Image 1: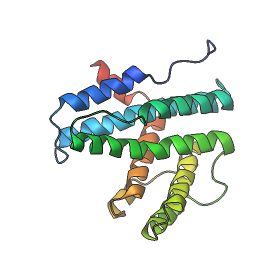
Image 2: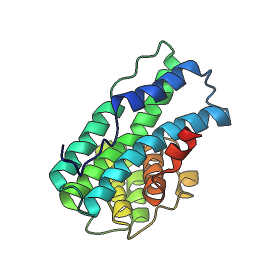
Image 3: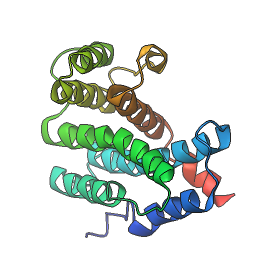
Image 4: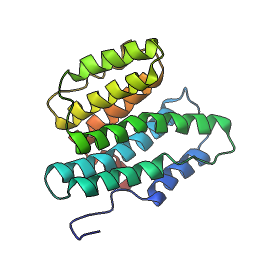
Length: 195
């Protein structure tokens, strides 16, 4: 690691979130529980956004950026160990949303933004592919939407989530929404944690 680099995410940081989930009496219907899970998701997205910002401003090269993104993914996507089946399912939902964030970030660094289409068009194509049970294509379109979001030429309209039937695409789009917020303001969760 060079001096120009920083630690973008740590095992300890993720474990702190898992500990909070473990300690809380989570109710998927409650706003407080939902906020904890969203903050957990947003926090990981912020780490990815910081890597992407460093890559875009030339502080780190593509090789380091890809390594950092993969490192964060390895930490966040590792299997959680809860006795509660419900908590496992809730954290799995957060991890599923973040899968698209990591894939879009890697794709952006490795190949740049999607050469054609808009975020909305890719999301629509992803929804159609999911309806046809072609999940690989659905994921690929959501990732392409993510690369356009990272390039910042286009914006994800979050109201699209209201029109998507709950499923994998809605999870992935939720992850992209976290990434969009993180790219706009990469300090939000950390400020909250410091209070």
